Image 1 (cartoon, rainbow, N blue to C red):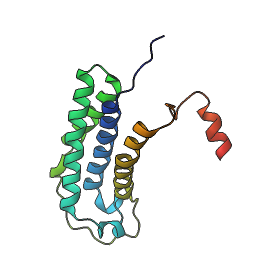
Image 2: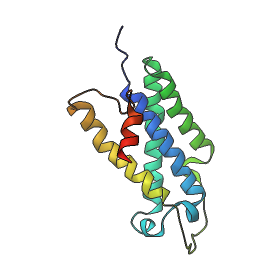
Image 3: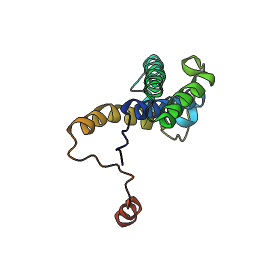
Length: 148
């Protein structure tokens, strides 16, 4: 049986497309989805530029994976998520000043930390990994059940 190759471009596109979609949701509902403490660390312009880079990379990498005929479904997920993010406003979402909110979800922190963690650890694991082993291998349910 021939080995099925996974496309780094397709999975990166899917990750960036979904993160871009979550980032657009943060722009639409900043008072609910972003944390006040974390908003003090970055500015709106930085977040918009990072979203633009994520959207462009999701489109380019997803298109390359589709043209290379590798993991088309995963690549389509990335391109589709990025397209939905653009249709929902993309980097042009305007919002009013954010008032005091007693609670927030902190989705902005999650999106940024996942993006930068993936930026560092995915290439490290890809090129320096000892074994090619998927986290969703047979028996992953047992691993989750025994770790809880």
